Length: 197
Image (cartoon, rainbow, N blue to C red; front, side, top):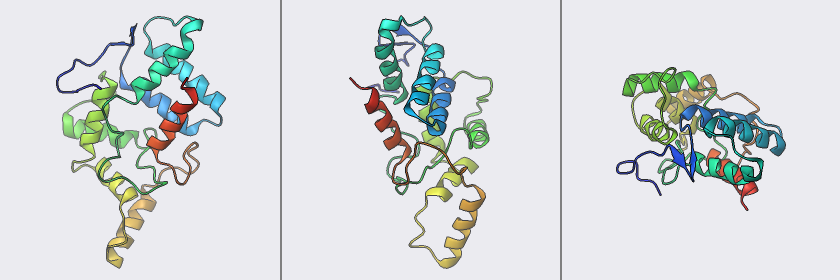
């Protein structure tokens, strides 16, 4: 397990030099949600590996390298952003990197003074900062709250307000790969299991 406070963030992963920038992982996760089949997902994984690994991976080592990329993606020792003590209801996708990209950019700019359009940020640091953004007062955090809030104990007025905001900030219909009773983390874990030896 990695300790973000005491360990140096890796630029070598499982013996291979890597480009740990968040963009590779975000593209991969975006693709997973929109891919039509496991073959499509494997193609996306291979494309991500081509950018993630600094040196070409020999064909005989590809399965091991792809598994390594997936282990890196899940960022050892870290929770998936949007999960934790305030888990969303089953089937609720709290955010989508593509649909919510502008809100994520704005949150990083507002909270951390970072311009994600031009800065390189290690994937594990990006995830930690994104988790922190969900606890802050910014539009992105409020949108995630509106999408995932349990309205059962709210007044009718509060419930109506949340429902209006859910509708306004709803994720696009048809994000593939997430079943109604499956969270993003469940989806990622199921996909990882398909490639495990």
